[in-house]
Length: 448
Image 1: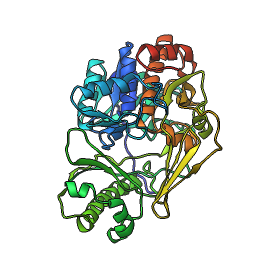
Image 2 (image 1 turned 120 degrees about the vertical axis):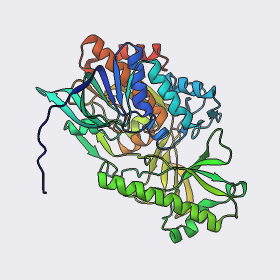
Image 3 (image 1 turned 180 degrees about the vertical axis):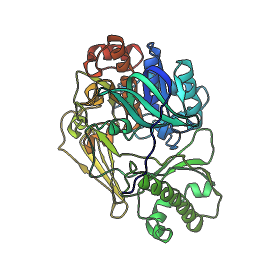
Image 4 (image 1 turned 135 degrees about the vertical axis):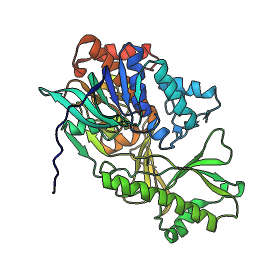
């Protein structure tokens, strides 16, 4: 490979903090806010123009149930519940009672402003339009990260760092042990589309199966949902970009372009084969919806059995009830596995939905699962925590924990743990799980 020489230069230290959070998804924001509320000086770095990640920049406006699978026990609280309450005051969220798949529909434009407000109220220092570049080590210890933005390159010094980049960029550049799953779940480009009333009842999935190839679309599985406050406007997530690893720059670029092409092709199909009614593209995301790239090896790897049998952990910091949900990597379809032992495989190329069981019936079923603190702690570096979809998990386990209401809790736990490590001058892995759970509960999290 041809190379060029870049002369060395001094990089100014532009900020110093107790905690630096890289990545401004809700997961990262919630980590920053929880640490700041406890008294830490926190800075958060985000490459987009807003916070919220896939929820805002990716247009995915669904948060799943805060209850167990029987809707009897509340299992999720904390900042997820607080933000929902805040959005309700602006008619920016709609609750679908007892729905495991789409409990809360959000107007994520309002969510952008609410996250700004959360950070401002908590006195977190935000940096938008700022790209993480590289780590800076002294005697083998992470002392700072280098970022770049409109003001040029600068270093941020901190005592603890949280990697909430999604792809685990900081951990990867630190040389931490990592892996890429064999069956990476493919990304989707979402879109907000205005549909006239006749088109709303059109069976577009059937048309996609029959005529999709005419528009360069493979048979695929997708979904749509409404956007609160925007009549006749729906968020569509209809197609996938198969075979892409969006942690590779060229593949990310190709995926963004292909995803937008798919949205236009889908709309062209609707125009040709649907009723003659209004259809307009209202919004495209500023980033493709990435489901999976790298995983960073942690002190505990979540297994599918942990999820589906509802294993309880003494260091549990999050609870979830969303099922195992695995989008097939190179083919139309998705597999759901539920805690009651049933499963559904959806594949429009064959018989549609095939229902069955992944295990025999039993007298009782778990109604929720848990995530342990150990899953946030990498093997290397004692001042770095994992926070987001780079968590160490088997394919089935990842299919369940990757949704936002679960990762929101992971963010809160990382933020509280970072504060406790700072307060006690401890390595992050030595934080007492009992003390962590106690402080999470004090801050509104539901700890079981």
